[in-house]
Amino acid sequence: MNRKSPAHRRLGRRAAVAAGLVLAVGLGVSTQVSAQAAVHAPAKASTTAPQSVSGTPGQAVTRVADFYGAYIDAKGDYTDPDVPLATALRNHYLTPDFAKRLAAWEEKNEADGVLRAQNVPAQWTATDNGTVGNGHEVIVTLTFGSGETTQKTKLFVLVERYNHIVDIDTTSTR
Image (cartoon, rainbow, N blue to C red; front, top):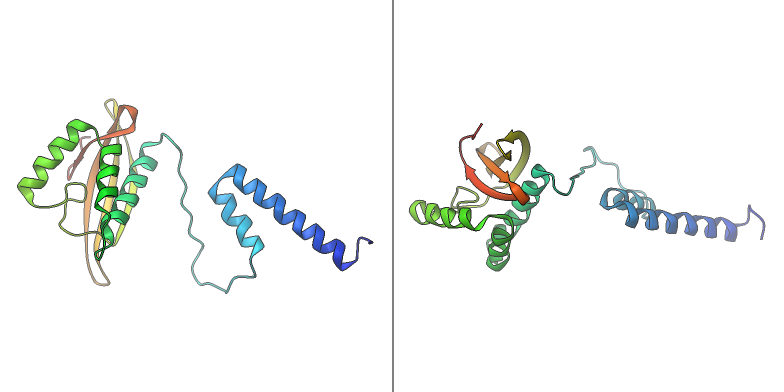
């Protein structure tokens, strides 16, 4: 089998794909997506740029983004919302003291305190707003509706020691 034979080229391609997948496992999701893209047949031409999401463990904006993404997914299935998951997420990400205050707010306002709304947003973004005292503030912008009938709500999420959420408000603590 010489270097130009089809069998040799197939083995070389398989080795390259295998090496790419091993690298992807070692480096994380962003590399994994690239390695998988190399394995599949050529993609159709797209007019939009590829979308990427990244984060760093322990970083407040990543933590808040992870929480809101998972929470909205759990609440967002109108035919079968995952209430146990939403509750577990709140227990994991919120401090017990804040969870009590949030429950009181929800009873008074008849709305979901994490979303500050009665329904689930169509889109969300999390933006770092810097340090505040011993904590870190993240701005979460929720977009409700679609098309020309959208409404945005800006929430200020305070993350303190041990990366737990200690407050969600409509005004900044800065």
